[in-house]
Length: 141
Image 1: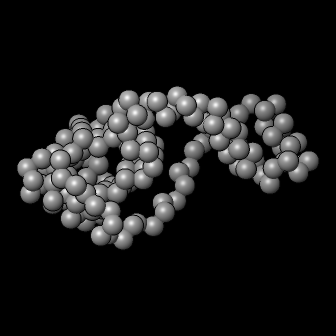
Image 2: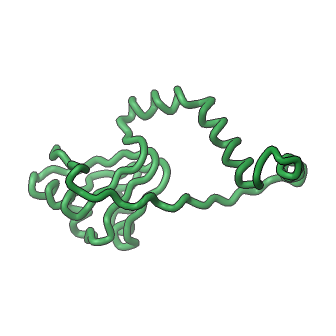
């Protein structure tokens, strides 16, 4: 597999946080509001983020083991047009596995993505043009 170097390229800007919508019961929401009112947290979002981070910390060893076993990239993996052209020139295909954010540059065409990406597994978020996402739909696991 070709070596895709990140040192020769400018890193993309940090992506915006993903938004989630959750439904909470009135009692849970009331308890969150009470903790916010008493100054334990700045707001509801702060409390919910803290709770999620605490749970992720509790399960961090499991996450590490699964990342290692499934050979996942942990964090942000960005693919530029030049990266994919290098893969295409080598005659190989990528099996992308990311826990975090997989990002495909906006100037990557659906044809180039299909020619270079064999499979795509993302636990987190995929940022790519709608056309590239549509082209890869059958390869997304």
